[in-house]
Amino acid sequence: MAFATILLKIERGLATITLNRPQRLNALNRQMFRELDEAFDEVAADGAARVLVITGAGDRAFAAGADIREFVDMSPVAALDFSRDGHRVFRKLETMPKPTIAAVNGFALGGGCELMMACDIAYAADTAKVGQPEVSLGIIPGAGGTQRLSRLVGKQKAKELVMTGDMIPADEALRIGLVCKVVPAAELMAEVQKLCEKILSKGDVALRLIKEAIEAGSHVDLASGLEIEAKSWGLCFTTEDHVEGVKAFLEKRPPSFKGR
Ligand code: COA
Image (tube, rainbow, N blue to C red; front, side, top):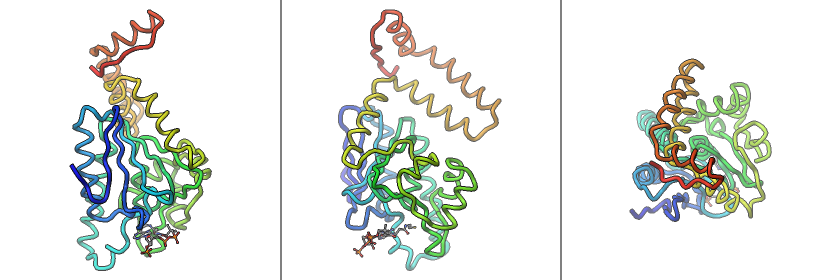
C-alpha cells in the first residue's frame, strides 16, 4: 500500500514506519492518523514483519504533535471524535501482537509524545525534546497523554509536565523513565537496529505473550496479573519454540526459533 504522509518498509523481519512530513516537523494530520491506522493493520497482519520501528523523517522531529492548522475550524464534536479516533489508533499500536520501538530522532511533542508512549520501547537521540505542550494552546492532551504519561512517570511528574507544557531534553526523559535509552543522534538508528536484532533472535510467540502479560497485567491487581502470567507461561509449553529453546540450551548451542 502506498501512503502520502508516511513511509512503510518491511525488510528482513523489520517493519519501519517513517512519519514523513518533515516540512511540518512530521505533525500528525488527519490523513496521517488514517494512514497509520491502515499501516498498523498491515504490519500486524504481515508475517514478514516481526518487529515495528516508528521514526520521523529528517533530523529535527519524531513528530511535533497533532497538526495545529487543523484545529482552527474544529467543532467541539469533531474534536471529541478526533480524540476518540486517536485513542483507537494508538491503542491498536499498543496492543499490536508484535514488539514496537519508537526511534525518537527529534521533537516528540503532544501527539508525537503520545505516539511514542504507545510503543513498547523508546530510544531517543540526545538532541530529542519531549513534552505535552497542549496547555499553551488552551487545550489538554487528547491522544492518551493525560493517561499514559502518569502511568509511565507517576502522577506528580505527569501533572508538572502537562500543566507547564515544558519540553524536556532527552536525558531528563531518560531519568524519569519516559524513554529507556539515549544515544548520540548519529548513532540512533544503529542502536535501534541492534535492539531489533536481539529481539528478532527470540521467538514470536514468547514475545507476543510477554507483551500481552505486561500490558494486561499493568491494568489489574497483582493477583490477577500473576494469573495472567501463569496462563501465558503454561501456553508457552505448547510451542515448538519452547522445545527448541530448552534443547538448544542443553546442547550448548544458540536456539533457532520458528515462531510456532
Ligand atoms: N502543527 C502544525 N504545524 C507545525 C507543528 C504542529 N504541531 N509543529 C511545527 N509545525 C510547523 C511550523 O508551523 C512551521 O511551519 P512553517 O515553516 O510553514 O511556518 C514548521 O513546522 C517548522 O516549525 P517551526 O515552529 O518554524 O520550528 P522551530 O524550530 O521554530 O520550533 C517547535 C519547533 C517544535 C518548538 C515548534 O514548531 C512548536 O512549538 N510546535 C508546536 C508543538 C505543539 O504545540 N504540539 C502539540 C500540538 S497539539
